[in-house]
Amino acid sequence: MQGPRRFLPSLPLLTAFEAAARTGSITAAARELSLTQSAVSRQVKALEEQLEVELFHRERQTIRLTVGGDAYAREIRDALRKISTASLNLRANPFGGTLTLAILPTFGTRWLAPRLPKFLAGNPGITINLVTRLSSFDFRLEPIDAAIHFGRPEWQGGELALLRSETVIPACSPELRRQYDFKEASDLRKAPLLHLTTRPDAWEQWLTLHGVDAHAVHGMLLDQFATASQAAISGLGIALLPEFLIEEELSAGKLVRALDLPMKSAEAYYLVWSTDRASHPPLVAFREWLLLETAPDR
Image 1 (cartoon, one colour):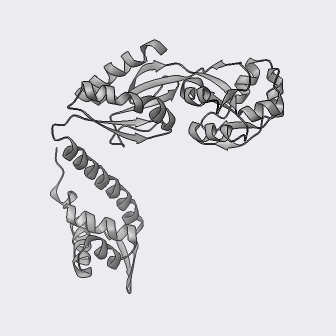
Image 2 (tube, rainbow, N blue to C red; image 1 turned 90 degrees about the vertical axis):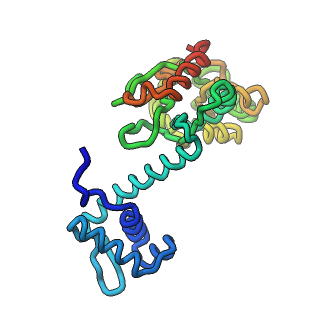
Image 3 (tube, helix red, strand yellow; image 1 turned 120 degrees about the vertical axis):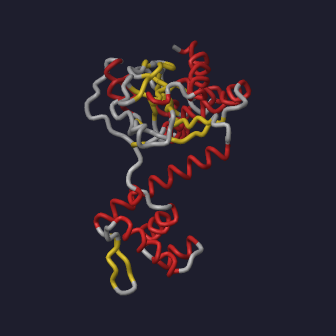
């Protein structure tokens, strides 16, 4: 049911308020919106009158958000961003065949992107928008239809389908392997170990699996596989990397196995989607294609 009209201000009023709140200046907001200062001031004042709430403290020639105004500005900014995204999506594909997919950076660029032309060629009416997300999020708060998830088969408010498992290997530069001349798993502790912030206990798991003391494992922290891979190529240390994502570097000899001692990850890759978008036609088509594409790796 639609709320009272006074709780649905017009876009010009909201846009003027958001710009003034973000810039902290009526003058800057007017410049950004190509309006006069008096026009922006009138719109902000009209919004306050409509809501019956003071949004700014006015002190001489300056403005400062009230506590309520600050909270309102953040929510309005998010709402305007969603409207803008929806409009861009509609313009890009007026027939509604758009899928917005959240991807993990390395999986998205190394594995998914090279395969997407095949999907799009078979589904010419669909447009895919890709955004990067490193961790779980709430589908209710994000304009996203589905996501690639690595971890346990858990996602609040979402449905999941297994895509593939993963095996990681200790990879380093050829020079580092020659320098340390690794013979057995315990030898790796003599070299610098590179750690991912998203998998802080990976080295402990690998060392324990191969019968090595995993106490007090230290080393450089990196936030993405691509960064860890490049650090390993540069000789900064050994990284535990998914084998299927570094095939190119292994083939080119930029990376080598420090030792041929792999570890199968306890977690896996999943496609997850919002329950209320399960029947969205572009999502259905993408899900069916992706499950076929990953079938050999399951």
